[in-house]
Structures are given as structure tokens and as C-alpha cells.
Amino acid sequence: MKRLRNHLIGVDQGDLILFSDFENGGPMWTGSGPRVSRTSVTFSESFRTVPNVQVGLSMWDLDGASNVRTDISAEDITTTGFEIVFRTWGDSRVARVRANWMAIGELRDSDEWDLY
Image (cartoon, rainbow, N blue to C red; front, side, top):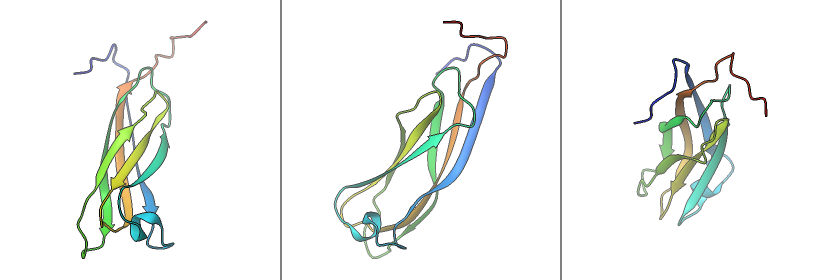
């Protein structure tokens, strides 16, 4: 469990299209084997410490004739943002994906200053 030092708890969230590869013949739709998509997210305000981040699929459009293989995660989390990483492999054909995310963490107090 992560304990927060004060009452200043921030929650930031969003929902964004990661890719739409069926429109342009991109690798998630036309490729095979291991494939990865990375999307950078910047928080609307920086956190005091590295927040906890949760990501999920809010829409996926896949070819029903192939196996469904997906993995989504948050990586490289900092106080200012993170990367949403979507992976697939084998013969899976992914047309498009939308992901939602939520970050919860400690915010700076307005009286807190960094002097040096």
C-alpha cells in the first residue's frame, strides 16, 4: 500500500486513441509476431511524488478471424507523466484501440517551495 503524506491527493484521468492501424495499413493490423505501440501521456499538473497509475482498454476493434492477444500497461511513470504500452503478438490483427487511465498521488502544497 502506498501511504500519502498529507491531505493533498490528486486524481488525473484521460481517455485516448492509441492507434487506428486499419485506416493506414499499420503494423497492428497488417503485421504478425510481436508488435508494440507506445503513447506518451503528460499529467495536467505534476505530482509531488510518483503516482499510482491504472490503465485499461475502453475500446478495442479486432479481427474476429484471428486470435485475440493483447497486453496493456503503464511504464516509465514519473511525476509528470508516463507511457501507455500496448502489445500484441502472433497472428492477432488489431484495427484500433482506445485506452483510459487514472493517476492517483500526492500533490504539492502551495506553501511548499524548492529552494535548492
